[in-house]
Length: 233
Image (cartoon, rainbow, N blue to C red):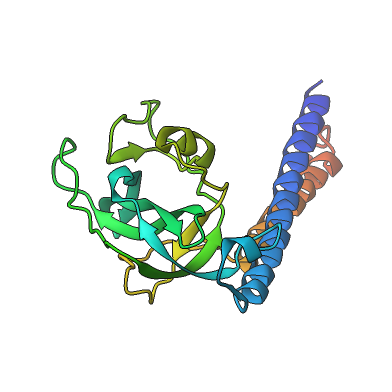
């Protein structure tokens, strides 16, 4: 009975470690595809929303238009070197009439939660450059509902919900302002947080652990539990 339980336990642990290794391999492959797309698409620039392909993610864009400062959106719980802050989003209307949501970057939070930071504003026609990216889906640190009114603090950027809240036809992607754009705040957004090499390294670690567990189990099972040391003559 003890032997059977040990075998079953070992199989469960071994399968779990292999599964973790395979998951890290798949994540590494996803990051390779994403890195290649970033490099390829980042070399192409579009100057109007109408000319964008059906899948516009990771292409560079340069638009002229105006910000709507009356509907500022603050993505909550954004740390920069340990300092709490927000990512500042503004709706942006291009010259051709298309509405976008633009992330201008990170801004520090005031000392007290009930206070909001002083938000920069850029009035009149401006030129904006950036990269089209999916909205960040972050783990929510609380179950508190998003605030009402403007500026509005939110736990996640959900374009469909924000389109209803703002009354604007926002797309399901956002524009991350280019770091060298004159309008950019501090930039700590990264499209790839962890490169594929790290995922492959983690996969190797999980597989090595699986091999070690299997080897230890084999050694334990090969022992003769009835063998006893003989008494000296």
